[in-house]
Image (cartoon, rainbow, N blue to C red; front, side, top):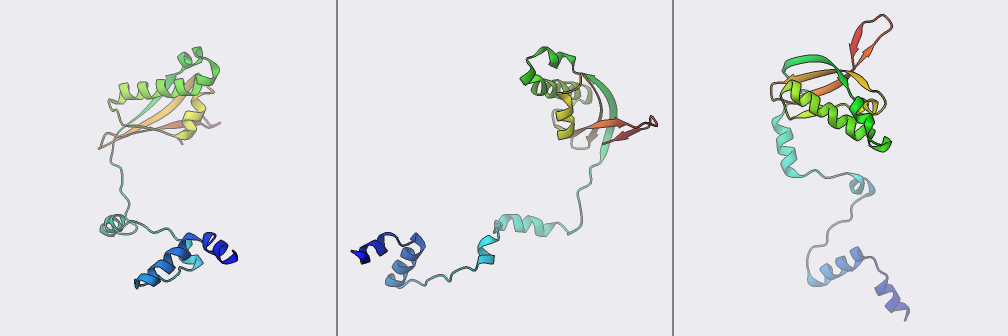
Length: 148
């Protein structure tokens, strides 16, 4: 009965290796702990990575940059749990209308800030591909505006 229990409770890998050995197939060598922890990348990604030179980054060619003050008071007419969702939706609509692009990326800090304030000072930059990045403008004590 003890021998039967050993067969039942053997790990799947050991059972597979035993079957391969009985059938005459070559048994794979066991991986070390370091090899198991490493993530193997698909081959197609390595090829794409090989085409790019290391250290070379894709630079955005900015076509248009504008500063806006967006009124989000309409978002505060909704129930409190929906303030952020509604504010981000209003911000996205505003930027889409004024920058004439549907591809919009809003900074996470700005999305969090949108739920707390009724007005936001934002910076919107549009690149050659039509992607609009929206960020927050902070106002320093010296009244100089800095982009964040």
